[in-house]
Length: 228
Image 1 (cartoon, rainbow, N blue to C red):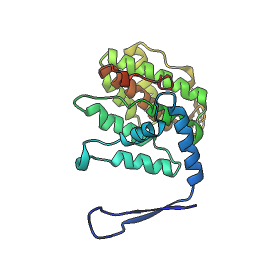
Image 2 (image 1 turned 180 degrees about the horizontal axis):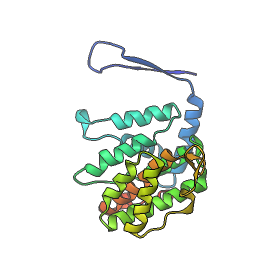
Image 3 (image 1 turned 90 degrees about the vertical axis):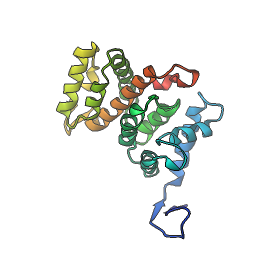
Image 4 (image 1 turned 45 degrees about the horizontal axis):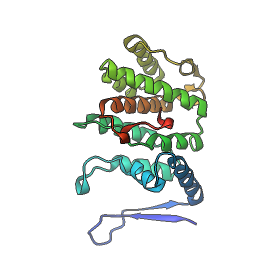
C-alpha cells in the first residue's frame, strides 16, 4: 500500500503544489503501535497523548500558528529521517523564548527515545548516558543561571566547539562529563554516533531539563521515568 499526499492552499480553487509518496506504511504503523505501548505508562489514552506530543511543535494559536517545526518533524518521521535538529530548533527558538517558557509535554522524550533507538540505531545504554548527563547539565545551568551555556552547546559547529563547551560546563557548573562523551572516534563519531547528533540530543535533554526547572511544577509537568 502506498500513500500519496497532495498539498495546496485551503479555501482556494484546487492548485496542487506538491505530490509526495509514502510507501513504508507498514513500518510506520508498527512504529505507531510501539509508541502507543510506551505512552500507556503515562496516559489513559495513548493515541491522544501521541497526538498532543506531535501537535505541540508550533507557536501561536489557531490560524496564526507557525507550524514550520511540526511540519519538518512530521516529514522526517514519515521518511524515517532524523527529526532531532527540528526538535532542537523548536526548543531553543520557540519554547525557550516564550514569556513563560515550558518544557516539552510528558511523553515527548519517550517518543523521541524510542525513535532514536529503533530508527536511528543509537545504542540504548549510550542514549541513557546522554539523557542522564543532559538532565544534570540542564538542572545545573538553571541553578547557576547559565542558559547561555546551553545556547553555546546548541551552536557548536564542530567537535572542537563541542568539547570546549563541555569543558566550560565542568568548571562553571561543577559537573563531571561522562567518559563516554570524551572519546572521539574516526569519522568524528562518539560511541559510533555522528558527533552532531550527540550534540543535538544532549542539547534537547539539557534545555528541556532547564525549562522544566523554570516552569511551575504541576502534575502535568513532572517527567516520566524515561525522561530522566
